[in-house]
Length: 81
Image (cartoon, rainbow, N blue to C red):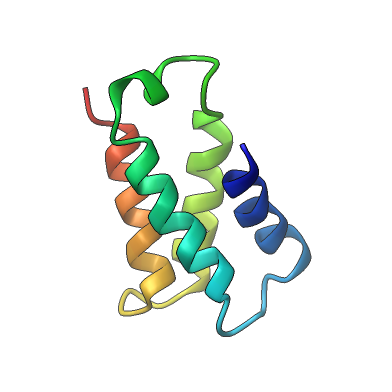
């Protein structure tokens, strides 16, 4: 999934970028996509790696930062039943 890969590349290649606009847009879009139950099925979305990346983003950005909030939103939606 290209949106997830963009976020993952940011974490690996540009972890100190202060205003990652493309990451914000990608995280918001991922939150919308995984709101659909069929997208949360095993094998459709890399849940384990996504949780690791969202956790890393939350640790890097302050709780008031949009990236932190969107990463949290993605994590919540991944755990919905």
